[in-house]
Image 1: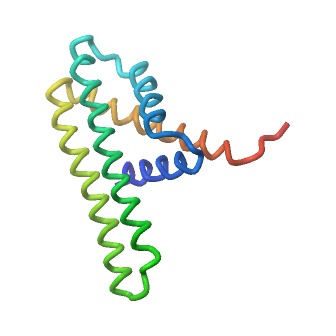
Image 2: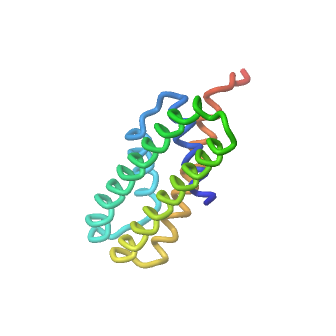
Length: 142
């Protein structure tokens, strides 16, 4: 759930800073590729799958954001808020199920130790990106 929250924040800040999702994915791939130490056989199978995962995740994110924008102005009753909460939870569940699906696929390509390292590196990338995006919004000391 923490990873889903970080991903939401990264996408939110990225859209606020006018950085494209494709650009973020490309930077993510470059960052991970330098640290994951894949064999050529692993890389050949992994990177197309990784890109596919991120494309599917972006589709889910866009659908969730569209639902949020559509429902927010219409929230007038407690039932509306309850429905909005359920939509948010459903979106997070779909993201988690997608991650589980691709985790199983990654484990067919590389050992669990590399899959685990992938998640740590990806989390590190998210933190750095978030810090970078936050820093762009503030004036820097001279």
